[in-house]
Amino acid sequence: MSIPTTNKQTVEIGKANKRKYMLEKLSSRIFLICALLSVITLLLIIGFVFYKGAHPFVAEGYSFINFIFGTDWVPSEDKFGIFPMIVASIFATIGALIIGVPIGLFTAIFLAEIASKRLAKIISPAIQLLAGIPSVLYGVFGLAIIVPFLQNTFGLVKGQSLIAVILVLAIMMLPTIVTVAETAIRAVPQTYREGSYALGVSQIGTIFKVIVPAAKSGIMTAIVLGLGRAIGETMAVILVAGNSLIVPTSLTDSVRPLTTNIALEMGYAFGTHQEMLFATGIVLFSFILILNFVLAKISAKGGN
Amino acid sequence: MEQRKEGTSIINVRDLNLFYGEKQALFGVDLAILEKEVTALIGPSGCGKSTFLRTLNRMNDLIDGVKITGDIVIDHEDIYKTNDVIKLRTKVGMVFQKPNLFPMSIYDNVAYGPRMQGIKNKKELNKIVEESLRSAAIWDEVQDRLKTSALGLSGGQQQRVCIARAIAMKPDIILMDEPTSALDPISTLKIEELITNMKKDYTIVIVTHNMQQAARVSDKTAFFLNGEVVEYDDTDNIFSTPQDQRTEDYVTGRFG
Image 1: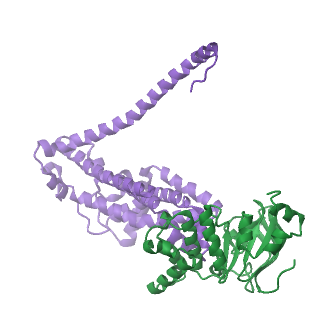
Image 2 (image 1 turned 90 degrees about the vertical axis):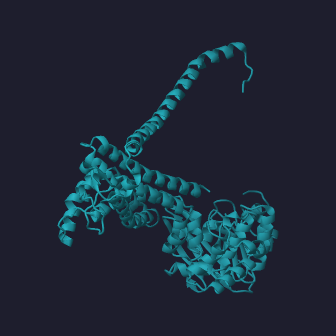
Image 3 (image 1 turned 135 degrees about the horizontal axis):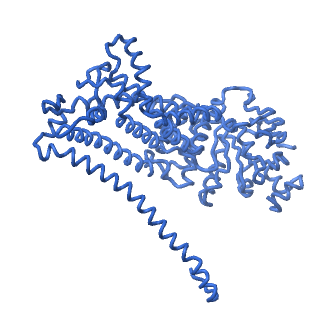
């Protein structure tokens, strides 16, 4: 790239740029360190959780199978089975999906395709604000509104139940699903809409037969992200779950999902009990990892 | 405007004005388009020819703030006085500037319109798809891969499938908005041959930038300038003995 100039000029430019090059090098180093920091933090957390959580099974002779499939969790009697919690977590997440996905998807379609620009400009930010509300407030809302409502309507002894968890989680996953799905739907080329309308197809027909299929991978991403939010949620769930250690058989049963178990007992646990809570964390972590893997698969597919 | 008297007009446009918000894009357009003929709309960029084309199947409805005055009567029905846009668009098909097939198989693309009309019978759909693809002169090239993605075809092939997709609705009129501007010369030639063959069954209105194309495929030509129709006549007359100085300047390449 060097274009010959007079010697004097070359030297002068070199001097003036020396500091720039130094700064350049320095800043790239700083960026690198910052980038490494987050990776190191991630590795430390994973390593720590796995080290603590694996200890009882590796060194103390506990069976991992009994841990996963055992139905009794009585730390004082040395019984550590988290099956009821796994079931509770899965049921709560699936339930939240069943309610949250259709509502979230229809909202996203409404905002992107049907609502006037003015209306969308009011609703969209409101939904994004919903994502910024601290999760404990969702729990308080659930405890103050949903739980009494369930108690009164269905005559339950205790309103804190699987269905209460499902409702709170469904509300909490809405902003994620709506925002991501709306972006995906808006990204569908206008030419698809024109092509469909020009064939005499109605707006609703166009939405469900052309636009939603074309935005499929983005919508799947929205659902998986919402799912991740639901399965990892702790604070709001503690307040409305009821925290009973039973395998739920009905929607009105009181439950204790995985996250809640860790949060409730970590404060006073020690020894094997504490390590078993870390092991609970490993199970939770695996769920999220699998979800992320699925997500990556979906996005890669969408890219093709 | 002297016109040949054979053929009946299927589209009658009277005093059509169109506004994008405050800005007027079409000024008092009067045009009678004859049945089973090819009518070309020519003119420089921004002259309103595409805008005009899109009023004929009310595609401008999709744009916010468009206001229209005047009458467009298609088949004895004022299309801006009826609310049945769906019916209008099944009668007036459209092919766009860039091929805009949906991300589905070739078969599903062509069957899309009929299916949405409620045709579910497999045999009937197969028949419609084959006939449409044959009419669009693309059947031989795609018959072995009907179930593969339509987006894997070349641009010219995609555009012919787009034409097949429009034909599948059995429209009376097909609007074409610069259908070959994104294609290579050979694909363009194929589409032009296709248009010439199609006019025995359909009324075709085509917007084109390419004056040779207008001369080759059309029976009538309308020259648009600044939102007005300057001249409308048999294509031969427009290109050989234009009445208006501006038309002459344009078709001889002096501007535009």
